[in-house]
Length: 143
Image 1 (cartoon, rainbow, N blue to C red):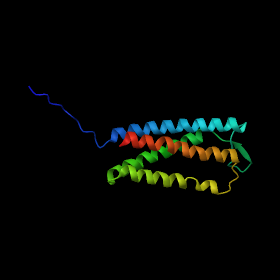
Image 2 (cartoon, helix red, strand yellow):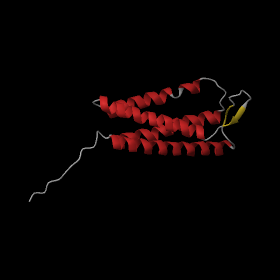
Image 3 (cartoon, rainbow, N blue to C red):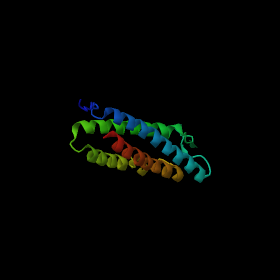
Image 4 (cartoon, rainbow, N blue to C red):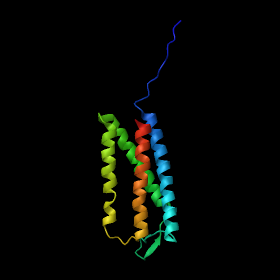
């Protein structure tokens, strides 16, 4: 009698990357919620953004950064999936692309749109929090 072990190959890590993407999305969104509420508390009131009607300022809605975070992390997950299929060094390439996208995400802060300093700083920190949470999770779990 032999001790044969049956192994099943995973379909190129798709399940792991899907799970990693879901965990990264939820975790980054939660991290940005913490930043949002902490910044409002430090600010002594709600973070303010320009009113789309042009009628001054209005409180920032918490759903907006959560939705943007989710969309961007889902996008990052899809990019990593594509890179994994086509690159001999997917982690290295994903890290480079992630850094470039993070740096490019700061371009809107250079345009004067009348964003109060507290809001701009909070939103800028949210970019770092999302990347700092999502990129390591995607790399560690999605290989």
